[in-house]
Image (cartoon, rainbow, N blue to C red; front, side):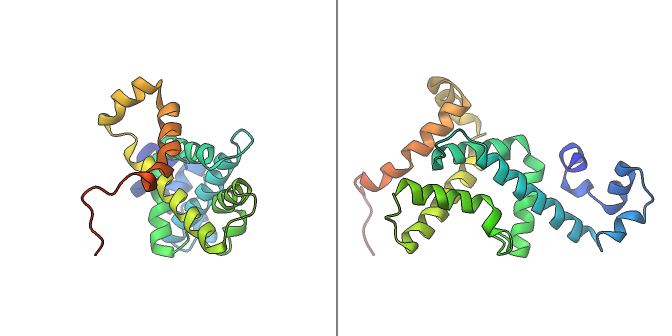
Length: 183
């Protein structure tokens, strides 16, 4: 992870890992057949760390607090975060079926079930999980844009800004659809 965060994902090679670990250049090949397999292992570890970050929020756990933790993780680990999603796209690992029961998506799902007192259909639950994950992912991507700084300042900082955005996600369905025609 040090190599990725210090030098970027392109610098992560089996040779660089060997150099960082102080072992022979051939040693990593006993664990990984190529760079792709190494990156996949790094991504998998990243998703475990993301789950830990999302699960570490103050109870009661809410989708808002998990979303803030998600964005915080993405901002604290930008290169790792990029590797995670680059691997996810190429390996269809979001959620990886073997990891789903242990991952952040499970935490999110449980939070949504609890928030609904168990009165949510399976389809609505899955759609809500996707919507919440997309919101956190999107906010992780755009919340660093400089045009949001005045709003962050007005709200009292980054954490308050993130919480406010997550709290406002449900409001869009109650706003009138001005100028939008149904096709």
